[in-house]
Image 1 (cartoon, rainbow, N blue to C red):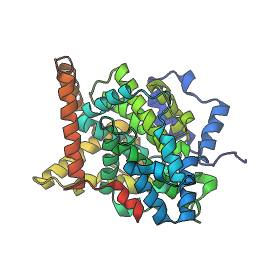
Image 2 (cartoon, rainbow, N blue to C red):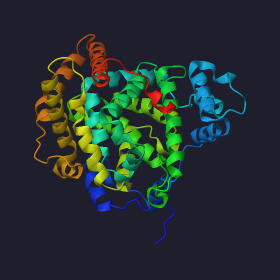
Image 3 (cartoon, helix red, strand yellow):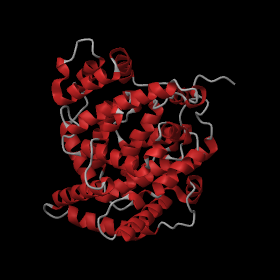
Image 4 (cartoon, rainbow, N blue to C red):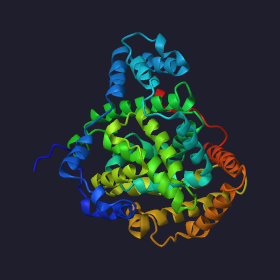
Amino acid sequence: MSHSYPTRHGKDLPIARRIAAPLLWLVRQQDAEPSDAEWTRLGQALLEGDPLADDVVRYFQRVGHRAGWGEMQQATAGRWHELPPNSAVRALFARCAQTPDWLDEQALRRGAAVIARSGKTGMRVLRDFGLMAGYQASAINQTLVKTGALEKGAQRRVAETTKWWMDCTAEDGVLPGHTGFNTTLKVRVIHALVRANLSQRDDWDTAYLGLPVNQLDMQVTWLAFSVMFLIGQRVLGVPVSKAEAADVMQLWRYIGWLMGVDEKHLCASEYAGRIALYRNLLSQAQADETTVQLAQALADEPLQRYYGEFQWLRSHWDKQVHLSIIRLFVGAKGMRALGLSRWVLPWYPLLFAPVNFLCHSALRVLPGGKVWLTQRGRRKQEHMLNILFGSAAPDIIQLAEH
C-alpha cells in the first residue's frame, strides 16, 4: 500500500500504544486519539524541514561554509543587521529578533524560575525520562548514530545539551541578544546542516525515515523538555502548580519557535502538550539495536564524570540512582527494550520523592522560601554542569566548525 508519508509512521502501533497509555490517565481519551486527517498530518510532518534554516544551509553552499559561519558569528555578536541584504543568516536573525505576538516576557522569567527550583531533580528527569526513554524511538536514533554520536560519547552529549538548556533557562537568557537566544539559533543551523548532509547519503532511507531532524521528531524533543519535564517533576516529588506549568510551557513554546519547530506543532498549554505527546508517541517506530547501543552508553555515562573526590563511590552511586529513576518511568518492558536490567528497582524515587515533596511544600509557604529554592536549585544545576564538563564548560558550538 502506498502512503503519503514515510513508512515508519505508526509502524509499531501496538507497542507504541502500550508506551503511550499512561498519558491517558492525564487526558481524556476522546481528546487524545487522532482523527484520520490528524494522523496523516503527523505522518507528513516527517517530511517537513525548517525552511528558514534550510535557506541558511543553501546560502552556506553558495558563499562557502567558512564565510557563512563567519556571518553566524557576526550575527550572534549582535551585528546581524550589518550583513549583506541577501544573506540568509540575516533573514533568520531578523525574523527571530521579532518576537511573536503571543510572547509574555514575564511568563518567561517565571518559567525559568520554576525550572531553576527543580534543581538536580529537573536534570535527572530530562536525562532519565526525556533522553533515555526517548531512545526507544529507534527512527530518531538514526540521526544520532549516523552523525557519530556513539563515537563522541554520551558524557559529552549530555554535557553539551545541559549547557544549552541552562543558557536557555537563565533569566532572560533566551531573549534576543542573550546567550540562550544565540546558542539556540546556532543549534538550529546545525540541525539544518545535519538534515542536508544526511539526506544526501546513500545509507539514509527517506522512504522509511523521512527527513533527518524533521518536524515530528523536533516536536517530540520539544515535548520532552516541556511536557515530560513537568510530568516527571511531579512524579519525583517537586510540586508544580497549574500556573507554574503554564509559565514553563510559555518558555518552551518560545524556545521551540526559535529552534524552528513549526507553530502548528507547538502547544500553548500543558494539556494540549500531553495530547500532542500521546499522538507523537503513537507514530514513533520502537526499539532496535541502536536503542541498546545508545542506552547502554548513557547508562555508563556517570562513570565518566569528574567528581574531584570519592570518584569511584560517587560515580557508581549516581549510575544506580539514574537506573532506578529510569526503571520507574519506563517499567520492566522498557528496561528490556533499552538493554538494561529489568531487575533494577525504582528505589531512589520511592525513597526520595516523598522527601522532595515535603521539603519543597514546606519551603514554598515560608517567606522568601521560593526565592531560596530557586537560587539553591540553580546553584545545584551549575555544579552538576561543572561535573559533567570536568573543569570548564566550552561553547558547544565549537563542534559545528569542524
